[in-house]
Length: 346
Image (tube, rainbow, N blue to C red; front, side, top):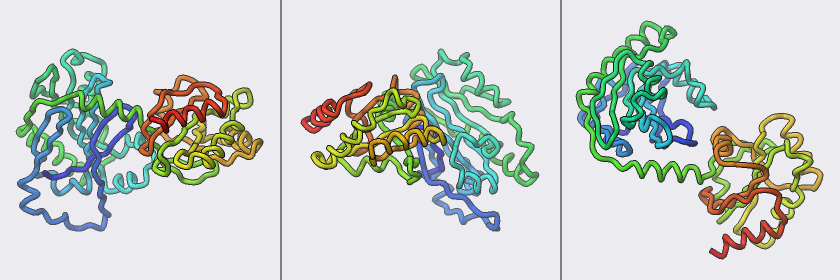
């Protein structure tokens, strides 16, 4: 089965597929050689929504240079599954290579067709109708297990920024959606797999960011210990809610007596200059040297969806999966150590 190239959007509520993305330079004068195997083995199979089709041969020359499919599957919205195919210019591909915020792609991704799957009762929902409105043509091609399958074509958005040569490629890709439509088929699927995956995402801390001191850090830090105590705090709590001294004692105690457990803090209202200065001041007052993390967008989304108050502390395993209930409010050192020992005893 040929692996097409998929971007993954926010992990907060979506469960999608990710493959490598390769871009080309403008100096490329000839398309890559196409093998007979590539032409005959064009099956795309998406088990999460029971969908299968053949990728059009017209895509072969562009899949690794000017196409980005995005696939999302979630049980928490009106659209269960969405497979959107986008044209990207050579310049756009270069921009994506250095783009830090994947939500800012409005002038880079040019959709030319998509498939959406949703429950029958959501047909007239605002979300589904809004997606319909982006295209001039829509067609229901299948229905099963209470779900409807629609293919959308003739994108109505603005593509005026494309050059004449780029518009020709875009037109080729758009027209090829008819070839895709001729091959679609459906089969039974289990939506509980998606539900379980989403629940697992909710219970996993993931980030790629910086510490207060400006050092790069990501969630691979959890692999440095069997367990990590993660404390969430905000600079706006200071000075009224400030357990920095206790947390420094906790960090020191873990290092001395529990070498397979580590401690990190997340300052949720960073990065901003004022918040960073306050957080640094709080640590300086008690000579704290534990790791303080500034959340990125992924961790920020998790915080917004899962924290009810501050401070809050959780314990995660070496894969960043939360294994305890949230410990809410200011705690004594003894309470934190008791929580750690409970985890170690299990």
